[in-house]
Image 1 (cartoon, rainbow, N blue to C red):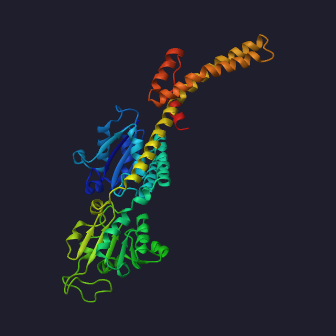
Image 2 (cartoon, rainbow, N blue to C red):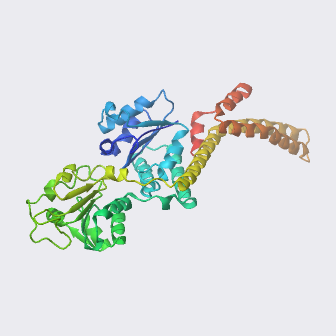
Image 3 (cartoon, helix red, strand yellow):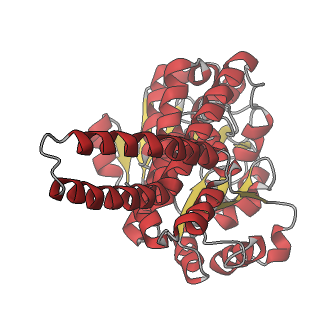
Length: 432
């Protein structure tokens, strides 16, 4: 059985999401220790989700799942009240497929989430917390996402967080080519941000990496690397600062941006005071989760802070036709996931019945041969009869499985033939 505890921008504050996402690597092992068969954790800038496979709700119910998450993140259960949902069983695949396709993102259709879903599975594999059913779930999620991208216009209707943030910055920037930009971070978001800045005409771009990877990133992309010693000085002289790192603590605060009151002498090109004696105009865009920028920065005179909370408030309305088409694809993919899973769940029982029948058949064929079935006609007739007799039970088994009634077929086999399906065989079949 599958369960998912989810907290997202729709249910929780960004402060809480930041706390949940601070150390996601500790959550899956804690869930395994608490009794889950498998666990995969998806932690992004606007959601935190733990997907688990359990034997049954007696082994790990919703409360136990939440307690394990609280233990791993160090957040009291009381602080999570009202900020999460628990999704169970048949609703889990449709939810994950929608998430992977960007349907549940701040900006509908944003593309970054697909890679984050794939990386969540890779992380679970490395830590040894995944399971056969979770493997199948996340692999099918990636397939559903690709189909949504290929057959709907959702990816064109939606815009990435980076693009939306820079669109919101447009109202404060008259000439992108005159901006002095400092990019803090060197990951995938940084690469997307750099490309988007260049599309808008920005040319004076530097990069700083708190983890020391600025030089490599700068050489690859043809921009200037900023060392730790230069960081504060360049930050103070930049008109646009964009942070997008995985750091668990703020990488930009008042200590980097603070300057003497009325400091305007030697103002570099692009840093124009709003009036004589006023501090420089600066826009800080924080794309990090956890938060990369100390909120106190917004209190500095002449500094405006644009964070994920603000970006969410300005997210455009969903384009209904593209969204409806995408949700249809997701529902279809979820139904297929259930159908395949149901057929796999009944396969060991069907195999047991066929093995039993064909065992009896071979014994009778051997008897017929000893009695003189030289031309093989009796054997041929018996094999045909066995196939005819097995056709209806096999078809009915798959029908019952699709209706969620596979246990009725298994019970019937045990009642009529004394056949028992081994649980380990069922699990092995499910991974085939």
